[in-house]
Amino acid sequence: MKDVVIVTDSTSDLTPEICAEHDIAVVKLGFTMGDKSYLDGDLTQEEFFVEMAKSRELPKTSQPSVGAFVEMYEQQLERAKTVVSVHISNKLSGTIESAREAARQFGERVKVVDTLNLSWGEGLQVIEAAREAARGASWQDVVKTVESVRERVQMIVGIDSLENLAKGGRIGKVSQFLGGILKLRILFTVNAEGSFEPVARSRGAKAALDGTMDWVTEKMGDCSRGRFAVMHAMSPDKAEWLRERISSMYDVVEMHVVKAGPVISTHTGTGWGVALIPLESRDV
Image (cartoon, rainbow, N blue to C red; front, side, top):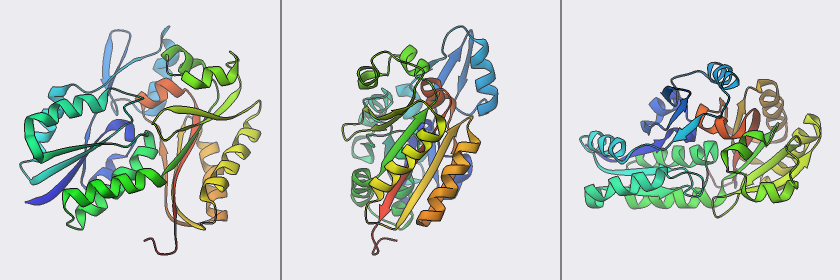
């Protein structure tokens, strides 16, 4: 029996291959379009955007039920002493509240951690937790690892339009930043409290991508090494441009280029993102 297994949710945008490699279990969020209900992963990104374009309204996303978490925890505790359950920011989803309510049924055997992030800002924390668990660490050390990485991980997202964020009601400070203009390309990050925060705005894609790299340079600081993820929603060309630029500028210890899932894409529409962990020379 393992000491610790890792559970996360599908907003981490971890691929099935990565989850299999690192022994990470995923509880999926859902979404509804018209009279059809889906789970994250039921549709490819391309299929999702085709269906979303046909719909008069945005898909309605839904957090996992308490029961879904209970079922997952029961399964994982058959093979491990403890579950560390690592999730999307409480400011962006009610997912972690479902996880916490379910965890109460298992006493000290399930520990729930808020990443205060989403997508690969969440995913990089989950992977580091899984690596620590694979080394045989205690649940206390796994939780400490997530908390340490949470302080270092940075993520920026660029979106082509604010229309989806506005319709979904998750625009917050971004709305004040814009003054109601929805057609600008906006760069935003997730702040230390786990909420969206605007970084910059641009009228052109090239300027927005350059702004993304300026942000990467700022957040990397004096570090020349790092772990990176480049995400995109129907923007593979932008993702490849960012991958090439990052790879030419830094000693890339780890690089993932991934597609954002339907739940995340519902709120962002088309766009791109970069998540990173700067590494000091002593870091592995």
